Image (cartoon, helix red, strand yellow):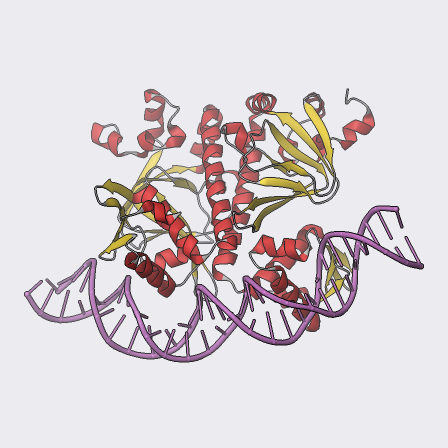
Length: 229
Length: 229
DNA sequence: ATCATACTATGATTCAAATCACAGTAATAA
DNA sequence: TTATTACTGTGATTTGAATCATAGTATGAT
């Protein structure tokens, strides 16, 4: 199974940074350890508190990782897309997932069992280094998010999230950077710790100032990136 | 050098979780790779933006890791104490420090050069696993901090920081948990994203409600822990 | 193309933390 | 012990985001 060319090309190994140091034969061995699954928009992939038995790598699509609070609020911690992984915590510690994962669009994932992945780790120590590198990057993003929420004005936080989205989901067009928003207004609010209404208002302001242009609800054109600093 | 008993007992290796899987002889080998240094209260150990050439392990004392913003605010990200390490990012990536480190009290540190530590890592892969484990814990703390700042009331954030400090710096006394505060009111404010004044007021409230008792400026007695949930 | 549903915008009001201002207190060094 | 400095507490005021309320718009399914 999984040996036809189409499958290979669709499978995570090729596009995953943590496997980037492996050669063709090594990748092929890994393919046999992988289980795939596809989720529809809004489907829950993991629920906070569940035990996770796999390392999950995103092949295609986007998911959000979030925590729900007792009083009905939601904090989005990550948006994971192609090549990102989660569930790594269960590899070294036997702990419950500390956040839920929900598909933001049709998303296909690859799963590698805990044991299998631990074997891979000891066989190819470089994978471990790559994971540490990725965890370090994630830590740095979280640290910046905390700095933003703790010290920056609401306007600055809106600027930052627009620039982040521009980098991750934007394409350069002649009029500016066109962002394919991964989140609704409410999602953005839950990502940067504001309310839906405040995000709406701030974006309207930016549009009035001719810095951005909202195209429907799912796209934003950044006309003047330099005014967002 | 470093072979007398007093030195051994004072050196980081024994109290550092990341070396916990090594035996006595292995630890002795590591001792020879270590350089020690002592910092006084308020001394800067690393400045944001500097290149770091060592993994730094705290032997004794406490430091704060923080970012300064352009408009003069400060966000404290971590309080590191005995057994904690930092500078691990420079081991896999050649990047500048993303935060400054300042001693909160007299603090002695142990340093292992980048190259030496990389050798250790390949010699004892378990150290790598321990580091990943520690990074995972750090990630979880950051994720919780973001959830707190994004979704919780100011009161809840004060409760949380008191409970955190009680766990890390508190001793059980008959009247309650006595916390040796690592930070001033302003420091606490910079840790949870509030102002000095708000922290003062909220602590005063808690004292009036007989939940805590402030003892000078550096100690707080938690009389009724259960009211902080 | 129409409809149903989910999402968005925006005005009015409330509220709580930031800010400003200054007095009071604790900690540290001489 | 006293003096000096740094830290803390608290009142008055401002400010800006949350909340409440409702109308408007976009999107996707049929």
